[in-house]
Amino acid sequence: MLRNLLKDVKLRARVLERAEEFKLNNLSNENVWFRELVLCILTANSSFISAYNALQNLGDKIFYENKENISLSLKKSGYRFYNIKSYYIVKDRELIYGKLKNTIKNIAETDQLKAREYLLKLYGIGMKEASHFLRNVGYFNLAIIDRHILNFLSDYVEIRNKQLSRSEYIYLESILRSISTYFNLYPGLLDLFIWFKETKMIVK
Image (tube, rainbow, N blue to C red; front, side):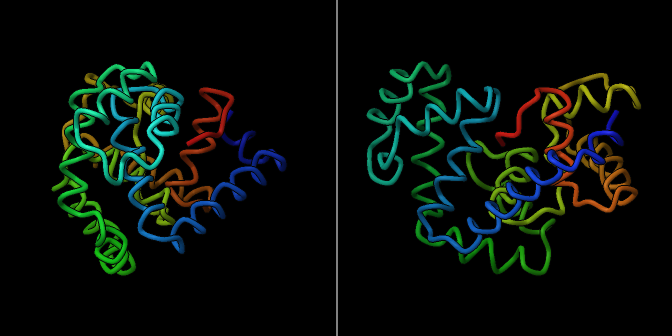
């Protein structure tokens, strides 16, 4: 099934077009980078559509509003975890907004794994979210292992717990990396094919 998807010329074109959008993010300004970080914070434990709609509703509030007003906007958009996620957004804004792009870019250009390690110091950012953020700003060497990817992998390996430990994440990432190498793709782009297989969408 995956092999057939990878041979789909139209789908491959859509994936490569999305990759170009991620590369454009890499060249964009600090606000674009921070917005992508907030999107990844919101996506954790929520659907992408819910997170994206919440971010659209927030608009530029992520750059200046206090926790209470961000929380209120998230709640009005129907987003579930409005209190904790507003806290994460404001804490990360205090920690890294204004230097996010330069800091991560300087690390990721030579070592994407180290860039992910740095991101794990932020609030609301785990292995999946850090990998997702890096992919969305143009770094494709890491796997984004969400529930759709786990569902795909469950056909090949036993997955006992969907709340992955760090070691479990790295192990599954190594499997995806092997598959990526076999098909001559980056792990972060293979993810988009698998997402399409599971959801019939490319929205990440």
